[in-house]
Image (cartoon, rainbow, N blue to C red; front, top):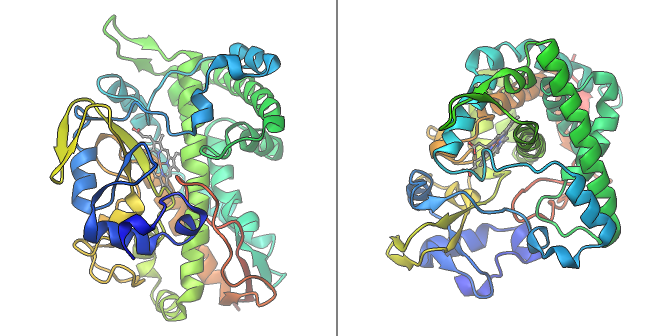
Length: 419
Ligand code: HEM
């Protein structure tokens, strides 16, 4: 099929995007799809070129749907009031540019310092063990809700000061307030979403206040107590800045990691030979994580906007052109990855995958995500044998409808308990 035969955001293309990615690679690595106000960038080299040049390709662009930026007058009066009441959150990381991006990033880098992340392995393993304990005697599991969703939530909640006892309530609020970053919210949900957002803000500001009074060894303490460099000299982060960063930890850290767990597990049950290879040699698990992220990339795309007239891959881009960087397509670029559709846990350059992007916005949580994924698969592969699809359910469960995130909505498995 020709590249113009695909609609990039149609449900069919989103469900199985790979033929579209191949067509873009062959015909139009920088592709202005008819009807879309942006160009899609799909090859490994061109995405690298863009992400390493923030002066020309700015991140200051909303990733949400049009209704996020819709005119105030269109809003229900109660919703307008709630939006006014909510604390304004400045662009801090994902959508910030130099010099502010680097200033925020140096604080957040401290929160994700290797020492802290490495020190988390013991308790990540404890969480994984207790989540597996909850289903191991059943001989079956719905992998997404019973495992994949639970691990990153517990880890990030711990790091941002949510006590375990409040986890369920926190999940409900956080899912409602910030879930579905690019899906249209039905009007009846908008008010509930805005209220949950304000409750969540108050809750998190109270936790940050506690950390200022009583510092702990967690990420929230780093945010609550660090000084931000500004042109007027150093100052603490404002509550709005802390909330903006915490919101990104939740959006960027929770669903992405959960999606990676679900899709990597699906790849393994679809490729029993690769599963057997890992069982025989668990030292391949870190490479499995890279290959899983390459094959099934949870953040399929993010955006940049050109700050001036420029040219990319021979295509002229006027100032203000929005680019959708399709990381999932770059990860299937055959110029970078031989036989890209082949799932090979021993692939030598799997770690070159672009699932975490590259350049100054390179995922600050990548070490934590890699740790969670490695420990998850170490324990799953050690404790479960003969993992297979449950024949009572759809063998090809659908993916989330999002055009930014890709993940399974469910994955029903049967297994034997390893002796
Ligand atoms: C498998 C899991 C994950 C994937 C696939 C992923 C993917 C990404 C990608 C593609 C970006 C780059 C954005 C860009 O170039 O514009 C990013 C940035 C970011 N990620 Fe992750 N991420 C994951 C896990 C996490 C975790 C666990 C956290 C934190 C708890 C996190 C927090 C962030 C933040 C704060 C940024 C913004 C960094 C910046 O703009 O400087 N991510 N992530």
